[in-house]
Image (cartoon, rainbow, N blue to C red; front, side, top):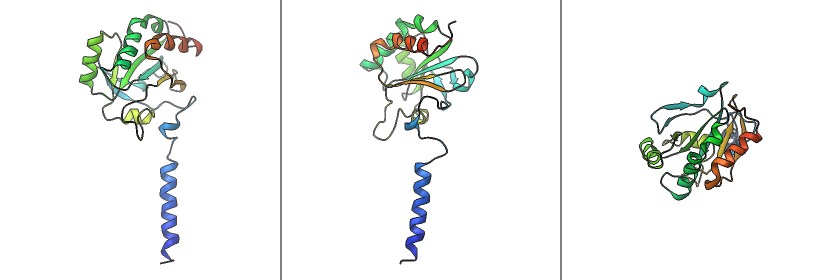
Length: 181
């Protein structure tokens, strides 16, 4: 029995090292300065959006919200619609995103008359990559990621105030020095 203990310990150590130290930092550890995980997600407008398509062209704001047709999410999306001109002054593509399916987000967008796309991630793969869905959290955190033209995360807002979302996004874009249009 003793002979197997070192082999078992070695196997456990290798397995633990692989689980704790994957090829890149875990999504929970995404921070300013990290390369943003790529995504290819369907928008409420029927188009598919890929982060790589914006590289070298414009900054990207990705605002995750928990669930369509809920109070806070409705307030956040309405704020971005009603005050979108403040955001559109900047050279930026902006999206809200959830793990709701594309049809739900399409209906949600239409019900609010949104003038920007809601991205759908029903597999939760992108949400996990961004750390907004994690153990104990099956709907996204209400976090907003600011990604520069080179695909690098420049800010992460983990204290989003839904009713002030647009003003806060515009202020952060100004603070980050994102070019005006």
